[in-house]
Length: 272
Image 1: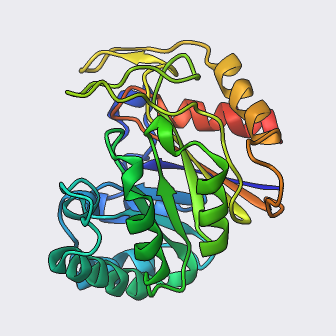
Image 2: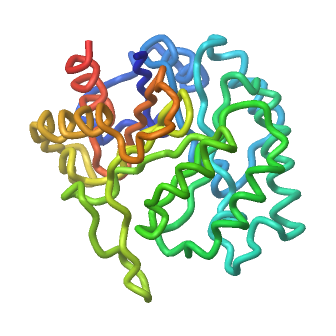
């Protein structure tokens, strides 16, 4: 199986190392980054959709086999109501996101639909209908954090849609815990499920290291945590009827104290 690694964004001041050589100008950071890693995720599209010109710059900065993850706008995924994917605003924002992804190239742009932990299982049919009309030829990943979604029916639906079930590492103990929120929603167990030939794991917790919000950093040995994930990926849940996984993409967050770069380097060593 192929492994592909990347981080969220290009700001690595918390990593405890100088990633970009001093002679690399900011405008060339993505181009340089793409020589070291095979993927990246941008959080920007979650808050505001970028311009056509920016998409063209990204397209020209990375090789054809590079993967860029673009998050679905929060106005769609985090909107209230059980019809959040059907609203006119949601449809127009999604259509615009697809346009931008097609500028980058559908073969190398993954659209990530991240639902909050409070998203009710009552959204099941709404999500299935949304994915069925997604009108996008490239890969789409859905990240589900509510515990109620962790069931064979969800796996079957995503497999039928040809959509990746993205797994998020959001709880330090790795098993699930009470999430912040008014209803005390529970995070689902952090165990992967294979629904497409590509799998996605997003490391979003502080369980990989701790950092001060300044120049000083303190790194911990997170090798056991990474190995735990490698073992989980070798034995995914709801395996009956699953396609063979040919690639796993691992994305690490730096801003959430995950020590993105050292973590990715260590993971690469463990699977090489």
